[in-house]
Image (cartoon, rainbow, N blue to C red):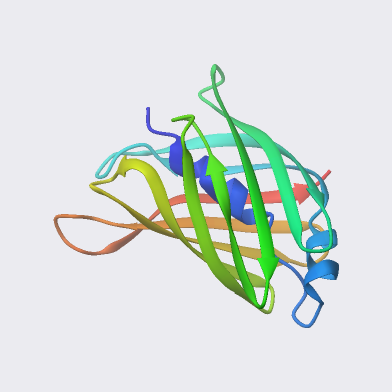
Amino acid sequence: MRVLPFAALIAASLLSSGAFASEEDFLKSIEGQWTGGGKVLTKLGGDNVNVSCRMQSAAEAESFSMDGSCRAMVVVTRAFRAKVKAGGGSYSGTYVGVSGKPSSLAGSRAGDTIDLDVTWANEIYGDRAARMTIEKVGADRLRIRTIDKDPSSGRSIVTTELDLRRS
C-alpha cells in the first residue's frame, strides 16, 4: 500500500494562515493538536483508501515542526514528521514519511493557502515531483491536497485529500 503521499500532505497542512497575517501569526495559528481524515490514492488507476489522522504541530516566529500519523484499513499506521522554515515570503523544509528518507518542500503562501513543490526522496507515481496545497479554513480546519501527474496521460490527479480539525 502506498501511503507516503498522504503523510506529505499532512506536513504541508501545517503551513496555512490568515490572509494578511504576519508569518509568525500565521505559524502560531496552526500550532496544536489536529485530527481528521480523508482519502489517499494507493496507486494510479486504483481506489482511494479512507484514512484517519492525528498530528501535533509546534511553531516559532519563523518555523514550525509537526509529528503525526495516519491510519488506514484499521491496522496500517504510517508516521510522518516535517520541519519547515518561513522567510522572505517563501517556505522550505523537509518531510519524512514512510520511506524514512527526507523529501524536500519549497513554496510560498498566498492568503490562506500554501502552495508547495514536493520533491519526493523516492519515485512515486512515476516521478519524484508533486504539488501540495494546504488551505486554512476558518480558525480550526485545514484542507490538504497532494496533486501528482499521471505519467501516461499527463493529467493532474489528486492523490491525497485530507480535512483536519483542531482538537
